Length: 149
Image (cartoon, rainbow, N blue to C red; front, side, top):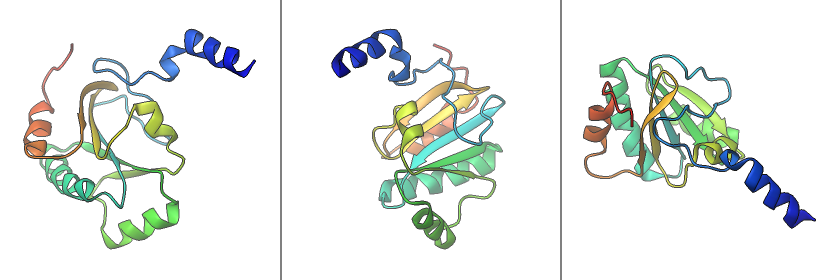
């Protein structure tokens, strides 16, 4: 019976498990308004060294471009996250979403750290999975461009 229920769910509600696609509306994030303007959403973890490097790049880009930056901490207890950010403050103006049970992470299709989404008026315009050479240049180039598929 459980297998039949899962099969029916997968047929009747495939979008519940589908990863977001460029050109689609962004899934909701608790406490966030994502429908207006350009917004960068970054999935982050305190233990992730590449996330720390990405955060420095995002800080510079968001400040220079005047963007809203939303940082989503995934799968960590809120007290650990708050303690970490007390020692390493969020970029000025950035907003923090605590996703301790990784529910938003799953809705957004986040599979590696960091994963960064560029949104325009609530629509996903680009997804960057991971961090490496050219990260800041790529993000900076995608912001402000019409990336409609």
